[in-house]
Image (tube, rainbow, N blue to C red; front, side):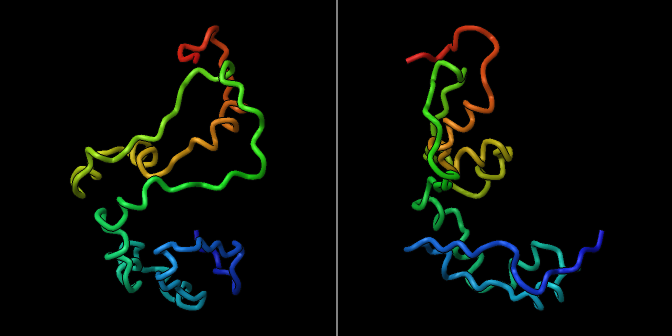
Length: 136
């Protein structure tokens, strides 16, 4: 499927104050269109500082990443949700090989703290199986 690249960005720019990601050079729209056939792994190597910034040793002190919620979350009703989510620290991950051993789901849980999203998940994914096992 070959889709044209829009002349202007369709996603608003998000900037995080104090974030090391602001040092990344973003590819312009014409450059992106020219590099369309280049595999993503090769395109990442064309961005200055990309490899250095995304090394595990550089990323680990920044964890967990926080994802902004879409507005004020609904009231948390823990009795409606069966699971109890907690961010998993990364003490057991020491190198890239340890990261490669994780599946995509576990890696996501190690990188992002979804705690502020619990009320949204509970609202969408209600328990239909009786008493929640992790009542406080």
